Length: 105
Image 1 (cartoon, helix red, strand yellow):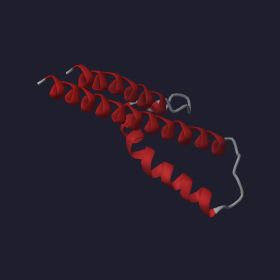
Image 2 (cartoon, helix red, strand yellow; image 1 turned 90 degrees about the horizontal axis):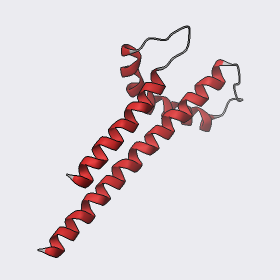
Image 3 (tube, one colour; image 1 turned 180 degrees about the vertical axis):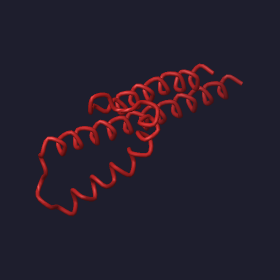
Image 4 (cartoon, one colour; image 1 turned 45 degrees about the vertical axis):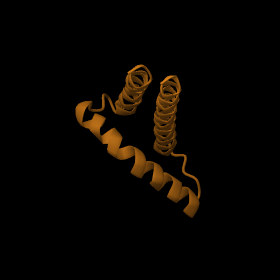
């Protein structure tokens, strides 16, 4: 019975670590998307590159559906979009609640 508890605890820790890493990577993708959009808004546009267009398209496809949820709730104030900030904050809160729930639950 003792070895089963150790295996279960190890599995819970591994699942929690995986989920935490997944949410961290998604947060980094959102941050990268925000930085790229900010650079585009101030006029920095790299020359045409198919690879770069694919990377930007990937970031848009991955980040926009999640950010759109927060844009409906929180409109832009004075031309500044605070939805990415709320999205990242939500990811961090979900990360701490869910990961602690998996480890200690």
